[in-house]
Length: 80
Image 1 (cartoon, rainbow, N blue to C red):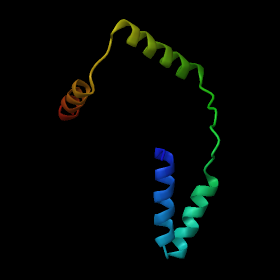
Image 2: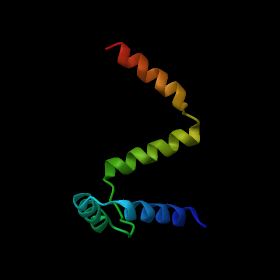
Image 3: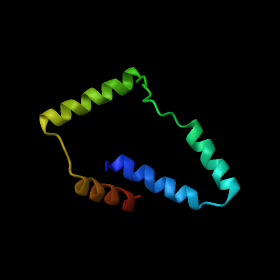
Image 4: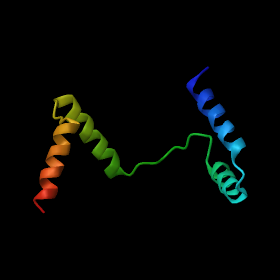
């Protein structure tokens, strides 16, 4: 069974055990307002420029590991 099917079935099983009416109403609203179709988001020119700059950084090898970034952030936070 596909992962999506497993998740869906697990959620159905959990929902069937819920007896709290307010919780079920809130869950229904959440599901009803969620779009099942993919939404297209229009990016600003600045956002597009930042993505292009990121792509150029990747191509040029200007990268930093997550571990190094975490260390850098901690050093910066501790220096405040």
